[in-house]
Length: 386
Image (tube, rainbow, N blue to C red; front, side, top):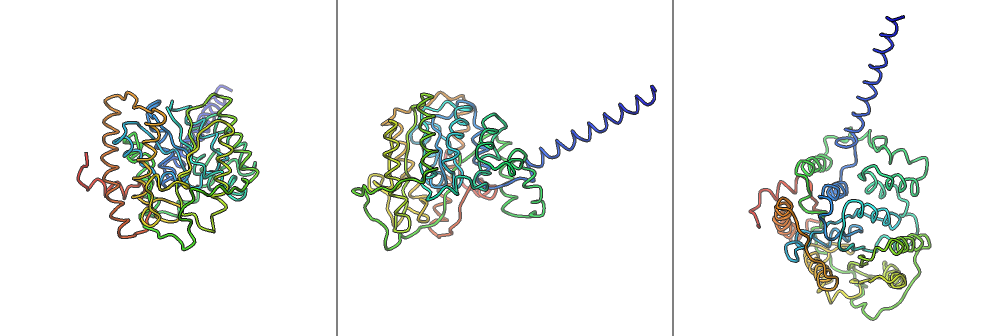
């Protein structure tokens, strides 16, 4: 019996070792190889890489936000630290979850929320699993992550959000792929460096002329349309959560867009959302309506009808910086010498990035230029702007 006992123990140990090896393989693969690699992952990872309680301002929203604001330039000009906690087509259904993530990792002086995610015509995008993966995949495991999955994801698809490997295990066949490899390498670089160089910026390098029917001046246009009912419910739930938890350091904004007949209804919903925000006692700045105050030019400052280009980005960064410092009194926090050095490096690389994107914009390349390894290699080769 003693001999058999030893055999059983050896088998148990071997099985446990195999299970552990399999678990480690899955965890490593879904973290570094068999995963979704794009600029959203780099941006979300970069947020969690920031030192705890070192970010003065967090901005939440979608692509119109991260194409229209540069944290490195804001730090250089106004002194406060900021980060773009944003993903492509970010829906209102996850805003409350994102606020919880922000407050679990940072103690920001202000949270800036761009309202695009509440303006969709219908509720389909609120539950689009492709868009939800962009945020949820890179959240650390926590009660908030589990609740977000349980609330938004159909039961039959939840497993791929708990264990992303189940969704992405087949993408090994995509290699070699320049897009995946440059994002994968960038992620390794970010983790090795310990912080994001561009703090989430991703600008489209183009100049878009407005359509013939674009609205040139919306300052006197008070027309309204109701929000999609589910979007309004999520938005009111967000505002209630903020009020109930005394989270008052929040300001809502709408970044500029080309408003033509095709998207005029969205502009009308933006006016309606301003009413709702006012009901709860928060401030709303609709820069789509008052582009002249920012100096935005419809002919030169957009990469496409939905997104500002690098020239519009510079103007909006300056506008948001002045708003936060002059209207809300945001002042720089005390940083350690190490943090100061990291932000100095981010400013240097952001300035190089702006110059690089301007070159690409003037040639109308049409590229989205993110913090991938190709972009970082180009920036490495440019003279320091420090």
